[in-house]
Length: 269
Image 1 (cartoon, rainbow, N blue to C red):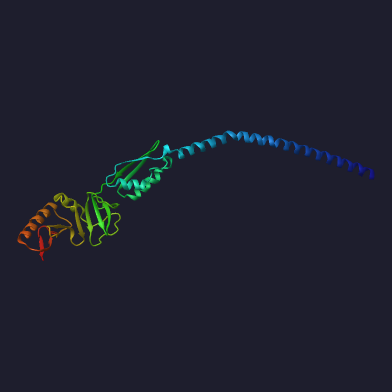
Image 2 (tube, one colour):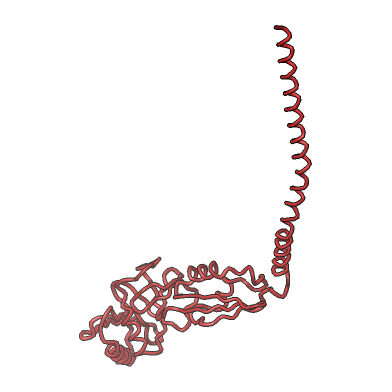
């Protein structure tokens, strides 16, 4: 019986010895093949790495090359918007052409200048940028508290401005609309434009909700209340005739009231 156990133990040890030898051989083969696989993997990636570093070098060349630095900004369509203001907002001269973000600059321009209908930017190699502006039609300028806004035909507020140019300006002398947005209701925009046609010398009006449009005549600066409606040609004719009569008579006048053209009045001093 003891003889059987010794034989059995011997077989177990031999079997274990063969198993250990087999595992050791496999481990040696795997460790020997690992450097080969690793070297193959590096060589397989080498072309991609060369392309990557080459692309980075080319991009660096584009961004660093002074030939691609913007030297000219060409602006087309700027009438109400001052070119100097557009250049200030763009601020692209001496910037690398590939860093010019047309979408961001377009949004900035349209936000800065409410009078713009559309702005488009094109870059042309090696160093030129073209800005094209489409403006909405502003016909008047509203002034309140020293600030100015472009106004469209129907009283739409088109955006803030610092320069009225040749447009007629209406002064909000009693704070009717200090921070206008959207539309300014109640102001007789049409009458202002018609009065400008009837009397081209008019460059400015004052405005209050009570007297409407106000102009000043004679070297004494008599105020004339034009109101909110009526025929501009008729108002202009009455205004000049009445002013001439009063000057001839040598009277001092506090104001001339033409809000009702059929019943013009005036107040003596």
